[in-house]
Length: 575
Image (tube, rainbow, N blue to C red):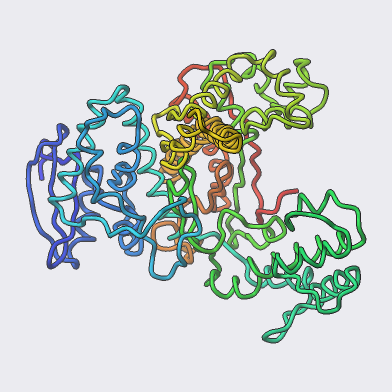
């Protein structure tokens, strides 16, 4: 194929005996069609990727990319039709009558590998949905609808960037599973034994968990008290005068009774055993790797979710089990106060940006004189972003409004829009869902002459709840967009580093990543890179440079830095 005929886009779809492909030029005009059997598909993709690096267009990255990675084929770019459809279908920037809004066949759940558990995160009211169209003609038609929706949108550049970033995130998610997070099963077992006691026989409890349970029952004066059923445990607590409404750690910690300390200890140990105990270790760690399934866009704000394994909820004490292979290192990096920094950039609040520059943002707020302590600064900022109106937050947020009027004005306006039943959007154009029909009906009923006081009270509460949601949506969603840009840029920088000698390879990371630095873990504002020791410093520098690049990509020249805590170590355990 001549360079002049090189495809800019290649649309893939399933065919009766393999796959079909439609090759498109830079203007997305069709130049060629062909069919390939499954035996030829991998080598054909590898050859086209090496020669032309097109953008691959497919219905679901998780379904198409995993087999390529298993055969040692990495692609640089893709366009994920499912993820992009979800963004464009709901974006307030897209014209109301755009055909993309009616392409209901693409409203499908993400593909989850057969060896993964059902998704942990489900949107309220979600129902089972059919699979995605997988033929090349359906994919080609959907791609045309998406291009038209973006071209006709209010701000095409932002949506174009968002769909590219979301699709890059899908590639990263597949690669994270393929490479896996280095995990020392023996160290995990040691931590469990040290924390819980020796592994019990089937049906028993580890000694320390059993001892904590005995102390709880003694304090309750009930040797047979059920500790794992919330209704039964609440009844036992009420009998001894602990009048709580739930058994949450936060509510229990406010009580004063001899049962509280052992009960909190029991809950902590029980959680470790059930969520990350020996059964979890046997199910999720194999050949020195933890391979969770990430779900890009799994949360309505655009944050990722996970399907089984609890990748987004790993407890701190198990991070010591995250260990680099011999001759390799981990680069562990997290962003300090990501969401408040994003808020400063979105709102153009230079005073808040000044408080964040080169330092802990909360300390900067204290230095500005807005509040007296770092703890107060943290409470105030979180209260502003999550809509806390009572207690300490309610007292401190007005101070922030005076010190940082543009930042506070942005979230206050988002809250008002939500309370009025409106839709808000992130920086790049992901829009919040509209209120439910029940919400709208209640608000309407509360304005009628015959509305009861209870109707009015409930309507106000529901309106405030929706305002809190939209207030946070714009910030959390934009922070997720920044993180996608960070991941995409970092992925490219790591791939450009020279492979190490084969004898230094980390074979368990798979054929694509065994000899190069690669992303191994992602959690909202944190990444872990697994890298050959000789590339560790360069990988750490790449993490920092990618963060700066992501800031410029989203916010241009706005004077804001994204402060990182970066360290190179053998384990992921923080000091």
